[in-house]
Length: 180
Image (cartoon, rainbow, N blue to C red):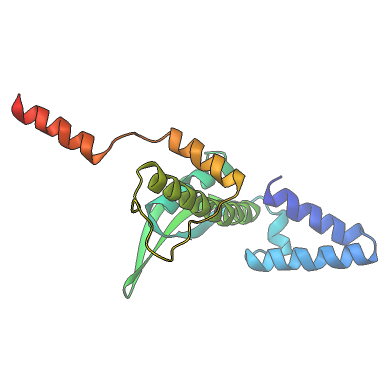
């Protein structure tokens, strides 16, 4: 269910729900609308206008572009613009969308950015294990890290999909090229 549908359902529940249910739904709706900067009037509008979304780095830019593409069904142009303030670079992507699509884009971007960071951490851990980037003998006082069975199998599957390249193999191939 997209954010627009969710907000509309929460709104409907707030309007027709039982006492406690309606109060909780109203509070949830108010919190979500405040978080995403959308008014009740805008929620029902179908007018498209330009909204700007901030991201950091090329990976987030790619992720945000893909989410905008998904939510707007690929039919709305967007452009990049860069704002510099001091040392930090704020980068924004503009998209023509409805207020409800804006909420959905922001929600999905927050969700998938956090998920991507967790997956990236899992990939890095698997990469370190795959290429044995740790000492042969652990330093004194360092205990091995324990992981769950689920994390273990996920790591094994990630490792299976990685390249088997190694520095030794690269050196041997270079020696063969030089001697030929």
